[in-house]
Length: 284
Image 1 (cartoon, rainbow, N blue to C red):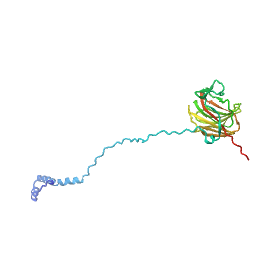
Image 2: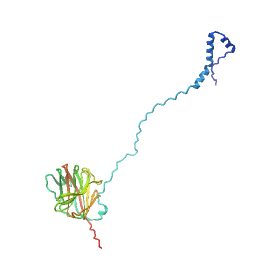
Image 3: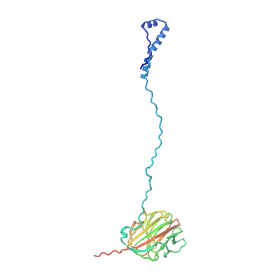
Image 4: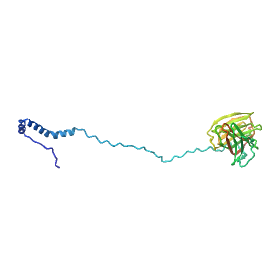
């Protein structure tokens, strides 16, 4: 390959002497000739000393947000409801069924006739309602008188507000003295005793996770009474246990109480009362 070279201008010493002996015009010519001779070298030096051109700036990249999609669609976790059956140790102590009421017909539950409320069978359930603030209404089962038993019934709040109260009565004597096991409409439970014309709290209002609170929600209440020992269950879970010797025998019943709301309706269903096996008296 033929290499191209820079043009070369040659002058002899004699030519330079002739030029230098000339006029000022000849001096200008000498300067031009020197520039022409040195220009290739100046260009090469300039190219070597010049900084390299800046590298091109890449265009800015706008990152879009990354959305991660789950590989599996999450599903709701359902907590199983407590079993509505007695614990195994209670089942082993049952002797047989004393009373069962499915409320498919009226068996003569005793409830006073009042202007502010009433009771009756509605759609296969026993309904108890009051329509006035600070009032209560009870209904008593007419036939069974028991001391030691397991009493279970399902109860549902149909119309209930704030601290309205409903539940079951047991060991009701002829003077209407009794024990109460009740729930409030905001999910609390309590046990009280009504004797001598006054009510005393044996277990104050207590919030428990065993209660399913809310309207049209059903809870199953249970009471195991053995002498002075009283155990209380909600949806198969024991929530309270007390001892009290005030009363040892009586009837069973229901209660609904309106506090400030003035409109409280509760229904009951699937009542079961079991007798208990007698415990043998130990001999010396």
